Length: 194
Image 1 (tube, rainbow, N blue to C red):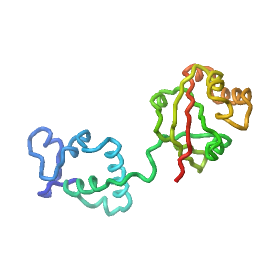
Image 2 (image 1 turned 30 degrees about the vertical axis):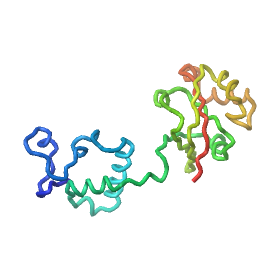
Image 3 (image 1 turned 60 degrees about the vertical axis):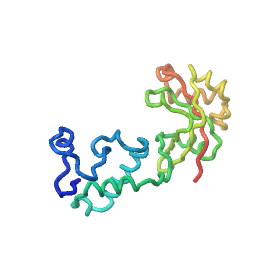
Image 4 (image 1 turned 135 degrees about the vertical axis):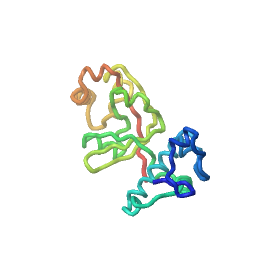
């Protein structure tokens, strides 16, 4: 529970309605997250960190916090996350091993709605079972077909262990014609090492 400086429960509804004034220590972002001083990523990182602290020990569930204490905790958390925020994508083992070794530099996907805004500089965490591999997106190219993508990007960048025609067959086993019709993405990646 979040308390005011008097020990009363903080009521955002009453403050927003103008029934009671905001208590000392209640920062604008406590009533409206869009008023956070930093970026959205900073706010999310601080909030996730705070939730982690609260969930780490059951004693936090039986405590109340003042607006000043919540502000102190949230604004003091300025450390960058250990790893950059990343999209999670699964890969078959044979492709995962190529990415993890740095030999595969082009990942092929279709233009699902959730990938349309993928851009250079973003990070992807590929997973295969318990194994994970973090990469940075260098470039995203869009193509009408898998053939066009392979001819432009070079099959050796997509899978250095397989000839072009075999790659085309394998890709089409994963993505049928209705998926290819969405458009093809060639995502140039580079391995991020710790």
